Image 1 (cartoon, helix red, strand yellow):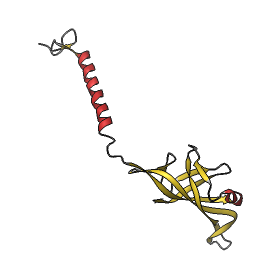
Image 2 (cartoon, one colour; image 1 turned 180 degrees about the vertical axis):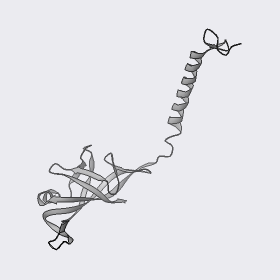
Image 3 (cartoon, rainbow, N blue to C red; image 1 turned 90 degrees about the vertical axis):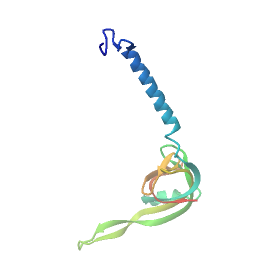
Image 4 (cartoon, rainbow, N blue to C red; image 1 turned 135 degrees about the vertical axis):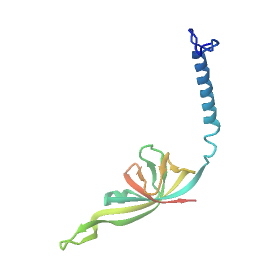
Length: 162
């Protein structure tokens, strides 16, 4: 007795094409049941209040003057509310400058400032990331925020969970 006969049947009883279809259907059912029952059991999501400190570097005094405590800012790409500015610290912007005698020193740049903004935010805290306004926020990560009068690029320097 041959393994596959002239009509394509396995041991003369089971059609190979039908067997392949049945195996694929069972594999799809098994994969779907695994996906929906096992894979997302360990993800815990908590919405919480956060304070995020952002560093806005190298901006002109015109921009510094329009940023105010109490402004509600949005994430630039999604246009979702990112948070409310509760504190603003303005410091002179420094850059490395080579002096005439060859030394490199940090010198303040006239008319340029670094601004540290503390924002009160509402975000989702999971075991993998903290997300505010659908944007994952990490220390050192770039965040572009906007208001109706300004848009600035910043970096997160501190995240405090409350």
